[in-house]
Image (tube, rainbow, N blue to C red; front, side, top):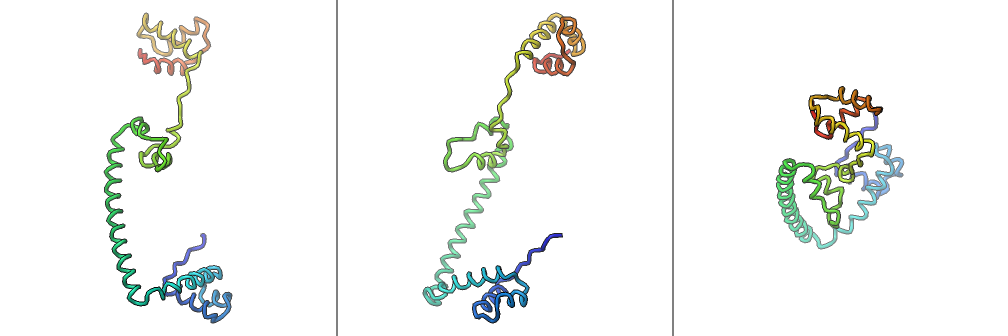
Length: 190
């Protein structure tokens, strides 16, 4: 099994960072004492030292004003997230009822705000489908498609086996699978 990532609480992180700032021991000693990697202790110490200046911004009153403003902003953000979730669910239900071709037609390659990857994800279309182009029908297939079509007009009861026999008599080297595929493309059924 791989390493299991430990999750440390904020109190523990603060305690270890404070011990590192106070230099209660070397980082190696703190690492073995608390069971935390040395690089993690360095990161927590740096975070603590970088955030120390924010404690003295406006005193106690400033901290409560900031948190009240942050709470209002957070409430607004949560409200926006809820609205967007509802809209996304509505949009997803409408998208699933559309055919794939209709969804592909909604993709705007010139959109600068929303990438093609994001558009494909939202429209539930594989990006490879957007770039795929059908191969052109070969000359051999076109030539061979004409003959079963003509034969079908005179003998509509011929299936792929009899069509292969007719084509073999005319000197064509074809197999049943090829003829069956061509008949399917032409919409011919015995």
